[in-house]
Length: 382
Image 1 (cartoon, one colour):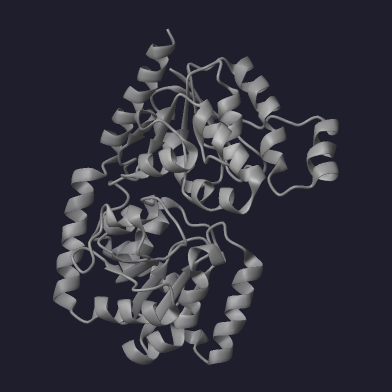
Image 2: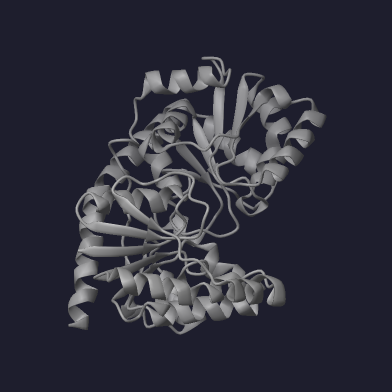
């Protein structure tokens, strides 16, 4: 097959998905610059806007989301010229409208989360783009059970158009017992072997609850002991926001108990962090069943989560993870303390999650399912 992907070339999950299919099919990734790293075996195409279109999109209108409307035409032109068998877009707001514009070909759209939950409620333009995107594609792929009900209620999408299944993770990378890798990662960031590590793996932006984690640091150290270290991964987050949190934590006198990791982690490095940490925290405002959460669980790192419907589909409180009673620093501290209060229970939860992800989140099985969906939408067009 010739598969045209539309998505962020620097998003780790987009890269993982495209890289996997490039081993079996001819793939191109249509995207916005900059492209920080090439993807082996994948043609990278950045459809340019004309000078007039750029002027209208960025100078005349100056709306936060206008680029996502005006880039649809050049994307359609370049995708059409490439002649794919199927078009698969990632992220309903940034690339969904452009994916739907390629309706000459069979189309699949995969929303990430806040692109359908939050931004459309903040902006009429965002809602228009997302609604047109969801309605304009042949099929919607999600890993969040029950999302079809939300899409029907919020956007009038036929539930039969929504396919829900785990997108899978690479269990050869995200696995437990990576003792040496974990030790080397900790040494790289001056973390002692005796330290209890709490990991924040989500993007360095307020939306992801990073502020609550930073606010909780002093009380976490007081309750858990001075050997507690909280690690923040910036990922593709905001350096200015990180600097603000650095100053905030330093002012409390607990800067030595925090590590800010500015480098963008590879999947192998992410797996090492999950193996070194006892628990990890994922408390965004909204989310689908995040691949980051599943990757942590597969490594035996126990999740502390915001109480979101998509998480509830896989994680039960105190059975294979822990939920915040409310999204506050105090509730976060209580949830972390509860999780770490019983070492044997923590080990049992880790073992349960390792088995669960092996059974339900094998990337190879998930990719076979997606490949069958590609063929399904292609056959329906014939």
